[in-house]
Image 1 (cartoon, rainbow, N blue to C red):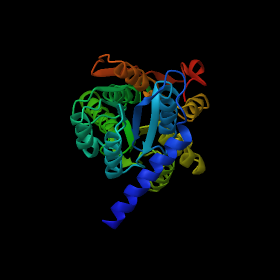
Image 2: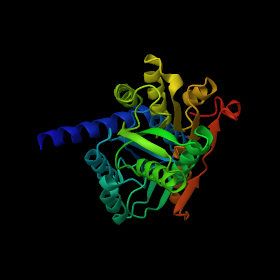
Image 3: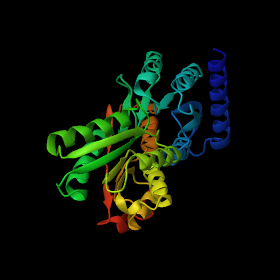
Image 4: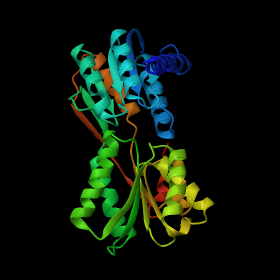
Amino acid sequence: MEWKRRIGALGVIAMIALAACTQGTPTGGGSQKQVIGFSQANGSDEWRTNQNKKVAENCNPVAQTLISDALGDDAVQSSHVDEFVSRPVSVLLLTPNTAAGLTEAAKRALDKKVPVITLDRSVDVEVTQHIGADNKLIGKTAAEYVSKTILGGAGGKVIEIQGTAGASATTDRHDEFVNWLSANDPKVEIVDSVVADYKRENALTAMNDLLQKHGPGEVDVIYTHNDAMALGVVAALETANRLSEFKVVGIDGQNEAIQAIKDGKIVVTFTYDNAGKEACETAKKLLAGETVDKQWVLPTNTIDAANVDEWLGKGF
């Protein structure tokens, strides 16, 4: 219990500190009487740092904006949601750490008539609006690309580096990748699958271990659930002088990964917008009394050697 109290206290401090540092006085049309709260699951990777930035930039002109960071802890994030509801906030933006861990917190917010907008990851209850690209489509598209474009229909062996266990994005990117291969190309075998929590350093460590397990010529493709992990994998492969053995697949459209495609270190990435800007657009509509659709599906694009020059510098 003492451990949980410490974690909770640290979470509150992180929320207040981040709000104070990144959210100043609202500018433009921002209203001091209206407050937007953004509950971030874990702001420690590049993609989520950019998501925080997009929310701060686009929501502050709408209303006073506070951002919390649960540092990857369901219990801490649930307490942040409850704190926002108690404040109260006018609109809650939520990127849940895991669906199971944040569903009840989202329900409590909705029960208090606080509009809830989920970004990127979803919860297991219908919210005011969910915004994000289609992770199921991305999983299917990645599987088809691996099967047809990388392996040429000849089959092969794949290592999968997954994101955060229990997160909806992780589940969809894994399940649909596996399902497509099972139905369309069973000659492609996933020989190992590990969790690296969407973090570059975790993927680097995991890849170092996997290189000890799988010798030269035993694996063809490394499918990672985001670009940060793809870059961690590349770093491990370069250090081991084994980059030429593998085709690395990423997701997100991070500028560093796009450059790595240009440099021949990553084969492909699939863009995945963080929905920060769009969430603020929806919040503005809700604060004005407008209604919004339950789903806002953002587009995804395939970036590889064929079109990489068009995408250089256009990621995040």
